Amino acid sequence: MRVVKGRGFSRTVFFLTMGFLFLPLVVLIVYSFNSAKSMSWGGFSLVWYERLFLKERNVWKAFENSLIIAVSSAAVATCLGTLGAIGVNWYKFRFKKYVQAVAFLPLIMPEIIIGVSLLIFFAGIQMKLGLLTIFIAHTSFNLPFVFLMVLARLDEFDYSIIEASRDLGATERQTLFKVILPVSVPGIVSGFLTAVTLSLEDFVITFFVSGPGSTTLPLYVYSMIRFGVSPVINSLSVVLIAGTVLITLLARNFLKYIAQK
Amino acid sequence: MAPMAVRSRTSRGPGRVRNYGPAYAGPAGIWLTVFFVAPLLVIVAYSFMAKGLYGGVEPRFSLEAYRSLANSVFLRVSMNTLGISLVTTVLAILIALPCGYYMARSNRKTLLLMLVIIPFWTNFLIRIYAWIAILGNNGFLNALLLRAGIVAAPVQFLYNQVAVTIVLVYTYLPYAILPLYSTIEKFDFSLLEAARDLGCTRRGAIFRVLLPNIRAGIITAVLFVFIPTFGAYAVPLLVGGKESYMLGNFVAEELTRTRNWPLASAISMVITLVTTLGLWLMFRLQGKAPQAKDPARSGGERRAP
Image (cartoon, rainbow over all chains, first blue to last red; front, top):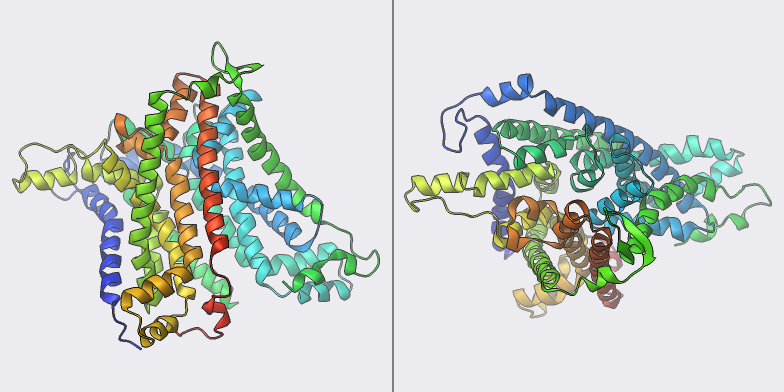
């Protein structure tokens, strides 16, 4: 079975692609330790890390904003999305098709359309742009992801447990808290984590619905790229990449742990 | 779908369980109606209104915005956008197919998946910035070329369509690899061996057995790459130039600089229409996919990895 002809081609393409995917990250990591300001090598130095951690207060302010929005929007999206998925999965009701459709559409809408329409909408209802509008926007694009992930989880479990719970006299609330929610935990957790990641990551939609004083990390990085590149961005990138790797590993182990339970 | 019948609330004992469906799904439905559907309806309405004097709109019916789309600038930008997103999609699929295949047949699937996911989860702007650091005039590539004496002065790699396409492919490649991987992973590889035993060539087996069977994955991958690239904004803004301007940039320009909101809405409608059209086309293709040829499910056992 081991000898499969033609693996050579796909292997070559795969490793070249990995090179392509990782080259930019490696370049950033290497140059974050460069003492010179340009791309020519001036020797090893930690000066840009020092600058990032000690001098760049705005980065940390932006990071704080990003975290606040990510956690709050992911939490609200997780609550709404989970309940929505349970309702759609378990019951038949009048607007079911509609809920399914509006929970699917944001996934396939180009980000710019969501951003532009929300900006025009907020202007129309005269809502001041700021952290609140960013929170609303993020909750809206996060909700469908949580909804789908919980729905996928609910689709695969055994319905007879719920029937059993009802037959044994459990109330709706008891069934929800003692049966439905516990089995949905993997879906809820991965939905929440995805929502946090997407929120921390989002640039385009945030760009349109942010106002003065509500700079998030991606917006800050954008202004760094646009108006005067300082090598601090290299060290910031490396910190973010390290964070990504860490979260990827943690999420994987966490999901594995849940799956085993 | 056996559970459907069981799930029907009417089949339960008389009046024992109320229909809590609306109570569960209501909050999500209302939230998305207010903050997703309503804003979309607003831009549909705005696109049919006249431009206000100082931004905003005048509330009367007008086709002015759509009429002003009939000019050479808009046509050029549209063609540009379509061209860039089609080329990006084709390149991404061509690269992702062998990658997904290799990953699906590997013994270390989790590790390879992680390798794809790490760049994918790295901040979007950081990835764009990394390409500026590589391709820029003072970038890594130019530093390399100058030192090697291949060029005498820095070459301008950025701010053109090639740069935009490279960065778009880079950004959306994982969107193609992941769905293709998961479909190929479910494919029953013994079918390929069967085709070969029956005298099919290697290439024939790939094109006539593998590809038709992973059609759903290919369609998903095409949509995942085409839709975001057609609405791309940040990439052409940061690594593109005047000639690689895309519709997304056009919308933003009309919205924030020219403050012609009806026009911005009308262009948004065009973007939405084209993506919906792409979606419809792909769903139709998927509908035509040969049924009852799903070996992954009918075959019973799957080949051990």
